Length: 195
Image (cartoon, rainbow, N blue to C red; front, side, top):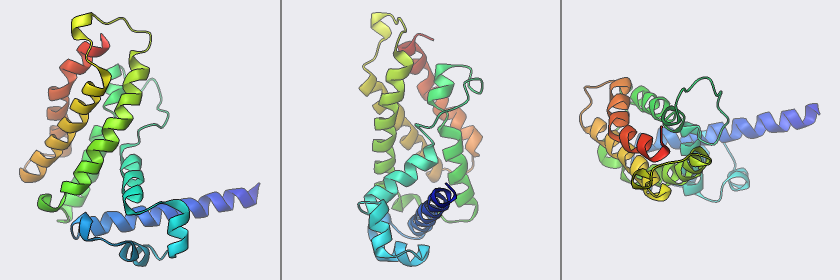
């Protein structure tokens, strides 16, 4: 059993190193300019090890985004009082992560397009699953019942638009930006879930 735990810790350390390497590189230059070899050098990981864990650079980016969003992981039910709070629980931690990078002067909104496209797609895909689970067993009036894929697309796109707006207007703190994001998406989310 101890051997399995050692392997799991080693695997997690390797993944963490790769995620950190990619994260630091995309804050230094555009994602499209980052090559796998640079990620490997920064993480001190062999090419074969990289491909044991990830198909390519895009797969690494997607997994890094999922880790930052923390979607799909069980959450303590008492922590969020509403369905809206549960669904949007990714927002503030993600924005606080961005705020930490901004405090170091390592973000350039002009170079974030590809990363934001990945973020939007990953977030949309994950939110559809969570929305289905939230809507299961609820009765919602027909005129308020948005198609879940449309609602997920709205939530994901609005989050990315809010993030991009914030990067271009940096005076606000993460909590303020989170409040603005929630104000934009909470009404249709509540209406669609009947809360």
